[in-house]
Amino acid sequence: MASLAKSLDFKRLWYFVAAAEELNFSRAAARLNIAQPPLSRRVAQLEQDVGAELFDRSRSQIRLTHAGELMLTRAREILALVEHTEEEVQRAGEGRSGWLRIGFVGTATYGVFPPIVRAFRATYPNVELALSAMNNAELRRAVLHREIDLAVARPKLVDDDLKSEPIAQEDLILALPDDGRERPFHLAELRHETFVLYPRQPRPSFADLVLDTCAHAGFIPAEQVMAQDYQTAISLISIGVGIGLVPRSVAEGARPGVVFRGYEGHNPGTSLSFNYRRFEQSAVLSNFVALGKKIAGGKA
Image (cartoon, rainbow, N blue to C red; front, top):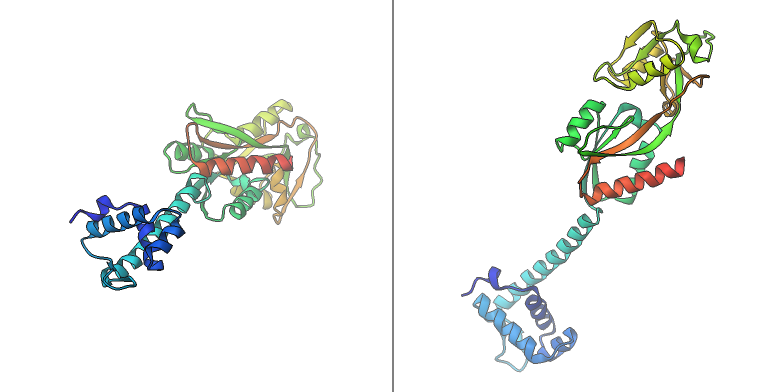
């Protein structure tokens, strides 16, 4: 007996199922929109391949043999699996299923990034998103080592193997302890304040952007307190350790003990970007980036 797995073609199964369900080769041929002889030949070839008669043709009305009944059950299962597989592969090829691993800086949890994630989940419910908070150095290493597919960085990751696309630009604002003190809101007049900066490592980082902004205003903060990340920095500000410059979007998240204010003076702003491997071909990633840029553009 020839190996069924090697010789089986799906058209032969479709023909068999039609004949088995109609129990009449003429009706089955009409249903398949073919002539009867090709149908009969394909069914006979299938019987030869499986080494068993599938139809009892000894009576005026053909019937399925026990082998034929089993073959009908399995043929339906196989064809359903093939159809389901085809749909799954098509969804994956179009980026409508699969998974996407995203790393993001802490301040990305405010502003445009959360609406992008919500919109993507609503639009592509069969894609699994894995989200991890990281600093820029961790993001760069993770995306280059294929541990994540997309890095949401501030302002961007610099590497010849990465492509960076800005999605949002925003001003800097002051984060101040809500301690009742009146402070000037011209940046140069804050030279005697303690500045809480982040991250401590790696450098250069957002901390250096803040220091450059202060330098442009004519001073370097005499007192500096370094924190490892934004959440630690804002906690230190809330208990009165110092003040900070932060992206405007973080004011969306109320924090007890902290008030946010605009200021007068040099304001270079800060950007958020999508960063991914330059020759990445993931359809899921392409869909996320396209949707993200669309939403970010709509909010601008």
